[in-house]
Length: 247
Image 1: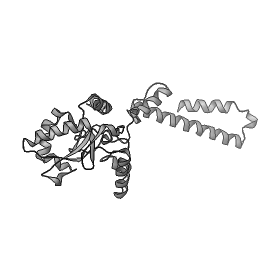
Image 2: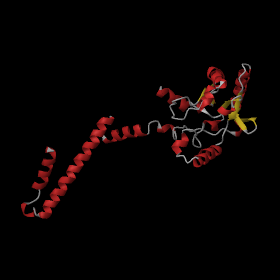
Image 3: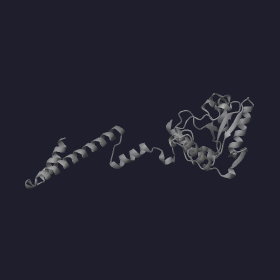
């Protein structure tokens, strides 16, 4: 408080004695409390800066704050999901009625499904390519039906333009003998999922959203993405890079 007293005394000394009326005293009181408020706010911000590790000049502190609030924001993520391009029509093949996927994904999935069948495992394709428009309908219509916030919806579904399915490389897989587990976490208890965990990487498929994943998306044991080509790896480079950084 000594600094405040000096500041107040300096202001008072600059005012001639003849003008130190009631109004001047009110002005002095106003100035006193203004300075006190400034010192209090400055001290509070300094304390917050120290406790949060914000050091350096004002510009540096602003940069550090932005870093803490929007870390990795330059990667284009929205509600935890990375942006993905929409596969060209020429790159897609019709795998089964209503279900398209990238031709390379289809080839690898057929091989994987055949290998699983030889061991008595029945894999079934539940979902594959989705256009940005279809993803928009899925995201917003179900969000409205379930009265969810965008953040709540993003835990189980990507916003349009941010779904792996739009690339043609992501697919949802189920166990043909356990339809009750389709799109359910309980799928992890099926013979199909146990087989996938042991063998999917042989065919360049990886689980996109394992438990406690770095993107904060709800665990999806049914959602797998193909990474068996340079183009596919390029699509998921940001997700893989960020995953490595968080390990």
